[in-house]
Image 1 (cartoon, rainbow, N blue to C red):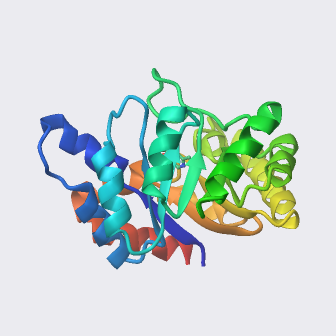
Image 2 (cartoon, rainbow, N blue to C red):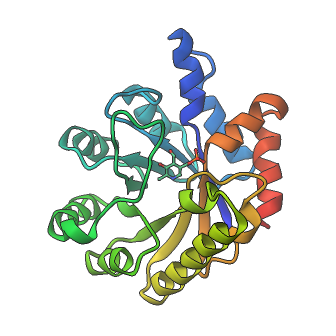
Length: 237
Ligand code: PXP
């Protein structure tokens, strides 16, 4: 069984369209947990396009499983994260113009910076995950800087234009998972995963959890949050 962390950012996207209180991301998180989600993920972006600061604090109080705060390594957001004290922070690259996170974070070329950041969070009892490509350099660096978890970027796999490229991307994820697992890192995966492409992802060695947002919230619009989570959990079992 692979666990499912539910990203509720796009509940806030819909709420923000009217700038009022509905739909409520906290309520979505609680329904997802009741349906079996192992954790709740939100991304406090620098432009605050969906999740707002008050959401993160409210989620920290409300979430009964694990709150994973996705974030860029900017001082402003680091300060907020240290105040919120989520169970976990996932450090991601962030560009203002992007529609969603576009690639893995380069920790290999910024080893010292991320080593310090890892320690800053771990000293406050917050686990640290890095969202990286399944490349040996990045994975060995994650172990070297003593990250707790790596989240393998599945975007290339999910967006593959054909079966050959898709298989190649999957093979890279499988190799990456094997290396990370052998180094003692916990392995999770996410980005672009949906009800149609999730099954092969289960082949990644040591994979303990996937993080899914857009596909799940899209389905929830038609069948409700509880069914959307349960249907994904069936595929993951
Ligand atoms: N993992 C990370 C690090 C992400 O940035 C995102 C997108 O916010 C996801 C997982 C979820 O991706 P999706 O919305 O495509 O399921």
